[in-house]
Length: 347
Image (cartoon, rainbow, N blue to C red):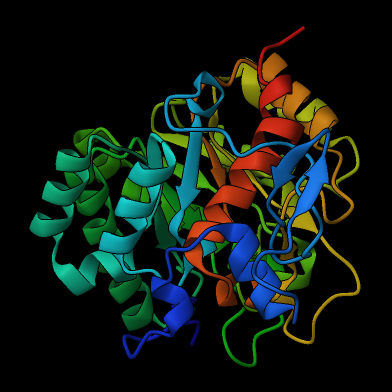
């Protein structure tokens, strides 16, 4: 039976790094055995150090109100050990206007509280992660997945999120029928469309890198995701363009153009593909600029396709999670304005 895999740490004691609010250059220097006063100089200006690489920041950290941050969203998974409250406060402090919310932290505080916190902070919810995991062959498991996804749609609507991200799920235990699993995913999406339409939430199919086909995502390419979405109206089912999952796909730029022509890009998520891969390949998502993704080409394709929504930074990496959240947000803001934001306006 295919069951949903939790990718959030269970509730428990948080480390000091989860709460530390200190200048990034001080935190990084102390972790690397340097003196807290050690900083980088570039053009006579004191620079912070990026996490997790420890290299000197190439650009200054944008301040709250900087117009370049107008479309930047923090996906909660990037600061996985921050509670929802901490993530909201971190976005506000850094001047990020949006947050990508995960269901587990919302459940910890309750939906009504989460809705109130987000609203009072003045943040947009760029997406809710996640629905899906509906490829089980057992009828009872499929029914349970459907019920869970209906609840996720309702949560997304309450939070004002335009998109519920769907991770289809992998193969049931002992099953090798990949085609059959994909057909069950298609059936499950069709069954969810009426509820999503009524709630005003778009279902966003997220194709995943093929290394996850067995356990997390039987939909591996943007082309496959678009084929699944095509029977439905664009406002009902769209696709998530994630640089980590799709950077390798042949003709991906043609598929992005196809998605844009149909009005189906519902989310643009960015992080890097780094090597060597860690033992747990799920944690191979790197900070933008630390790996192999061509963010210039990717972002220009998404912009030319007509996407004007938020850009979520979603990183799964043990060293990123171990760093103070304020340092992580500062680093991703710098990398975003350097590598992504300049290419968001189509040429």
